Every structure is written in structure tokens, then in C-alpha cells.
Image (cartoon, rainbow over all chains, first blue to last red; front, side):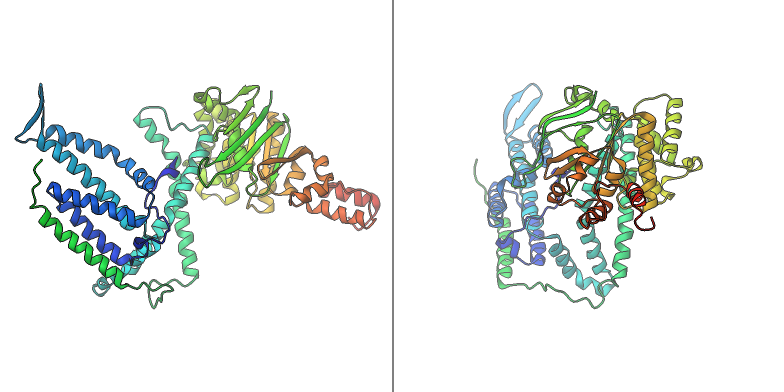
Length: 271
Length: 284
């Protein structure tokens, strides 16, 4: 059951987004977030949706996967839509039934929020998590943060910690599955009872899980020390990331799009 | 009254490119009151079979009968099946979580909602069968050595007194002493409770030494089944399934080839020793 989680899953591929330098993609993501969050007018939102769709298309990630990744968000989407629909105030009343009033602004806001959230999540996953291998990602972060080294921030250790954490997510999920099965075999019941007894039922899972996580951590630390790991001192890289002209063009286009949003916000399309 | 599988198949990832047939139309009836050794290579479906028997895994098709009743007739009652068919996983020592060894062994019986007295009785009984000293019961399970932890975990399953005890590689990764201790504990369990034991292993030596009946799995199918003698006397068939014969059997096979001895149906060192003594070969 835990295997269905698609947290930070990487889909290997050769698309333009896959080949883009991870550093550029991280910057792009920041630009993209500003882009999505600044949209205000209907025209701007349409543009955001189109841009996200374009990103999805060039990433060559199957649409099915993207829809699946949005599923856990469904509740949040419906919740925000409903809140916006029923509780927004405005001028144009479209529908009135007893105390329920639906304004035109409410509908507009609901649609905007849904589009915004969907685009945020889809854009983030397509730009970064689906198309960047965890290794490239941490490498990218490390390189981007390199300037901070001069003020004493342990950037390399930070990146190392991140890549180790990412690496162990599937391992720990597998481990959890195994422990759940083992405790079920001993008659543990996770499905019935009130909240308190259910929380208590988690102890037989959490304790062995923490113990094994610690054990793995110590083993890994020992193995790293045995191979003379000493942080990033004098480290050379097998794969040197190079930024190609295409990356800059890509970045340029995105910045233009981002600035474009502010102009589109001024455009008012009559409903 | 037995544990029986009828036309059981298990398919993982149906409808995806990762589709894999783990078990393919299996028909087995495990003999009661005996130790059945289940052997097979990695990926032959041993562990899948183990999880089927106590309802942790559901067969894609086919039925599993426990004492004549289909275990999946009432899915809500599946926990009752788990008390009748005890399963100790591979490396079970990683499931320990309680403050003391005694409490950990009591986890299963507690889930069965037994009385305090009965639980205490079962804990001491299971501990004794697995060779856990009384003074260890109040210690933390995390202070113990690997082999001791393993014994505590297996005792935890035995304390539920399942009629059928399924053990997935109980001796994997242990030193010879730890291995003998655990396997002897299992024999004790069988003798004292008159239970049926299924011993999953890839070690031919252990299986030959401890089981009465053997089931050989190969690529999800039953490759061979029979008594220890039947299985190992058919040496060529076993060689086909690329499983190793016990070292002692191979030795006697070679001795027979060279005309030094007439028999090659030797599966345990003890029996081999006896034969050699009778023959007056070596200083055995």
C-alpha cells in the first residue's frame, strides 16, 4: 500500500527538460513560482495554464502520471474551490437560495485557485522532481549554494545529507512494509478501534523502524569513513555539469514569460 | 484437517510491464504433524508462498484451505487465520519493539486476547523452547546479540501456539551454534505441540537434516515433492533445478561412483558416519 506514493519520483528520459542543467532548472522553478503566484487577471491565468501545459508536453512525462500525482491534492482543490465559491463576497449575485449566495467573483476565485494550485504542483514536478535525478538535483543545489561556503555554510555536507535522505526514502518504505507485515502476522490490528488505540497500534511499527533507521545510519557512516570520506575537501567530479547555450535561452524565455504576467494582469477580458 | 493449496497462482503487477508470475498454479497439501522443508532458489516463490498461508498475501486465483475451510471466505476473520498459521519472516529480529524480551514475546498472545495467566504461561514456555534463559526475559531486546534476538522473535510467534508454524529462512546469516539452537527450538515446538512446521530455506543441509518431507519450488512451480529419501535419491532431477545437494550426499555419490560404497542415499553426516563405520572406511 505504501508503494503507491510517488513522492519525488524521477522518470528517466531524454527530453529537453531532462537535459537542462539542474542549476538552471532550480532557478527556473523559482521564476515559475513567482510567475504562477503573480497572476491575477483571467488572461494571466490562461497564460499560466498554457505555459504549464507546454512544460508538460516538452517533459514528455505521460499525462496519466501527472494526473495520478494530482490525486492526493484533490481534497485540497475541492476544499479551496468550495470555500471560495460559497464564502467570497462580491457585487454580482448570480444565485441566491436562503442564506447561500453565490457571487460571480466567487466562481472566478474558485477557478483561479484551482488553476493556480494545479499549475504549481504540476509545474514543480515536471520542472524538477520528474525530470531531474536526485543526484543531479543535489549536485545542482550544492553548486548553486557554493557562494555561501565563503561565509562558513557547510554546503557540501548539506547536499550530501539531502542525497542520502532521498536515497533512503524507498528503502525505508520497503522496510515499513515489511515491519507492518511482520506485526500483522503476530496479530496486530491497525484498522479497528478508536483514535487512541490506533495511535497506540503504531508503536510496534515505529520503534523497529527507528531502530533500523539508526542502524542503517551508523552502518553507512562507518562504511563512508572506511572509504576515507572527508566531506567535499578536494573532491573532483566524474560528471561536470555544463551549462549549454540552450539552457540560457530557456531561462531567458522563462524570465520574459514571467515579466509578461505583469502586463497580462492589466488586460481585462470581459466575461 | 490440514493446510492445502488448490490451483493457487500469484501474479504481481498485473496489467503493467512489470507483470511477474510469482506462483503458478500450485497444488500442495502439507502433511500434518511433520516438518516440511520448502527449498528453491531466490525468486522461486518461497516467500510469496509463506505470506499466502497466513493471509498476508491474497492469491490472484485459487483457494487456500485451512482445516477444510477457505481462508478468504470471510476476509474480516483473516486475523484468526493468522493465529492458526504463525509466520516468522526472514530476519525477524527487526520486528522487536517492546521494552523487555518477555513483553515482546507476549505481543502475539496479547493480540489473541488471552488471559494474563495464559499469556505468562505461554511466554515462559516459548522462551524455554527457544532456549532463552529466564533472566533474559526482563532485559531489553535491543541489548541482545543477533542470534538471541532472532530466538526472541521466533519465540514471539511460537507463543501464539499456531497449529501451523511457517518459518522463512529462520537460520539465515547465523553462526553454526546459533543455527542449531534455532532449528532445535523448532523441533522442540513440533514435538511438544504436535504442530505442523513449514521450514523455508535454501540450505539443503538444514532441510535434509530437519525435515520429514520436502517441497522443491522452481520458478513458481512445484518442481518436486516427497520424503527426504525420495527427493535426494533423484539426484539428476535436483541437479536440473540447479539446487545444491547436501555436501554429504555429494560425497557419498562420488564414493559410490568410485565403487567404495554401495549407497548414495545419505543426507545427514550422522548416517554417513554410521555407514562408513560399518564399512570400516576411514577413521570415522
